Amino acid sequence: MVIWLWVAFLALIFVLLALDLGLFHRRLHAISIREAGVWTAVWVALALVFNVCVYLLYQHHVFGIGQVIGHPIGGGEAALDFFTGYLIEKSLSLDNIFVIALIFTYFRIPVAYQHRVLFWGIVGAVIFRGVMILLGAALIARFEWVTYVFGAILIGTAVKLLVTRGDSVHPDRNLFVRLARRMYPVSQEMDGPRFFTLQNGQRAVTPVFIAMLVVESSDVMFAVDSIPAIFAITRDPFIVFTSNIFAILGLRSLYFVLAGMLDRFRFMKFSLVVLLAFIGVKMLLAEWYHIPTPISLGAVCAILAAGVIVSLLRSGTPAAAPSATSPPDRSQ
Image (cartoon, rainbow, N blue to C red; front, side, top):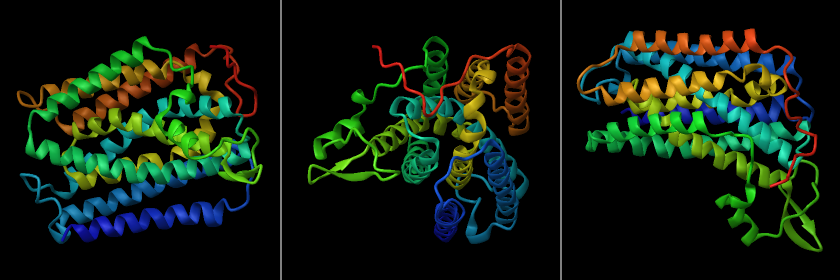
C-alpha cells in the first residue's frame, strides 16, 4: 500500500529534523555564510538522492505507487516531475526569505536564535503543507474545474507581487499573534531563545515565540500560492508533497546564505512574477494544450537564470540589507 511510503517519508523527515536541531545545531551560535552554504549543499544533495529513490519507486511501482492518478507514471517521468516541482518551490521560497528577514528585523531577533525559530517554523510548515496538498489533490480529483481556480490564483499572485511592496511587517494584524496575545501575556524582553518565560509570576510568551508565529503564518500564506504551482507539473500527491517538503527543508540554510545580500538579487522579484504567470497560464491551458514537463523545466530554468544574471549585472553598490539585530523602522 502507498500509505507505507508516506509513513516512511514522514519518518525520514522528522529524523532529519531531529538530527538537525538535536545534534548538529544543539549549540546556539550565529550561522556563518560558509556554514549555511555547506548545509544548503547538504539539503540539495539529499533532495537529489531522494530523486533517485523516486525514480526507483515509480520505475518498479513499489506498493503500486504511480498507478493511482489515471495513468501509470514511469521512473523517468516521476523523477523529472519531482525535480521540476522542487526547483519551482525552491525558487518561490525566495520571496519568503525576504519576508523572514523583515520579521527578524522587526522583532530584533539575534542571529544566534534565528535558526531555532526557523526550525520550528519548518516543522509547522511540514504539517500545514501536508494537509493543504492532500486537500488540493482531493479537490482536483473530484472537481476538474479547480485546476482553473489554481491557475487564476497564480496569475493573481503574480499581479499582486508585481504591484505591491513587501517591505513592511504588521504582526498586530496577524491572526496567530492576536490569538496568542489573548491566551498569554507577551513579554517585551527575551529570555534567551525560549518561547515562554515568567513575567510577574505569570507564564508569558517571548518575542521569539511571536516571531515564530509570524514566520509560520507567512509560510501558510506563501503555500496558498506555491502549492497550486506544483499541481501544474503533476497531480501525483506523493511527488507534490515530497518535492515541496524537500524545498522548504533547505529554506533555513538558504536564508542564512542570502540574508546578507538580498539587495543583490532584487530583480529576482520579476523572475518570480514571470514564473507564477507562466505556471498559471499552463494550468489554464491544460485542457487544450499540455506543455510537456521538459519544456516547463527549461522555461523555469531560463526565467530564474535571467533574474540572477540581471540582478548581478545591475547590482552596482547595493543598499545595506536589513540586519537581524538592527532596530526596525516602526513608523506607520
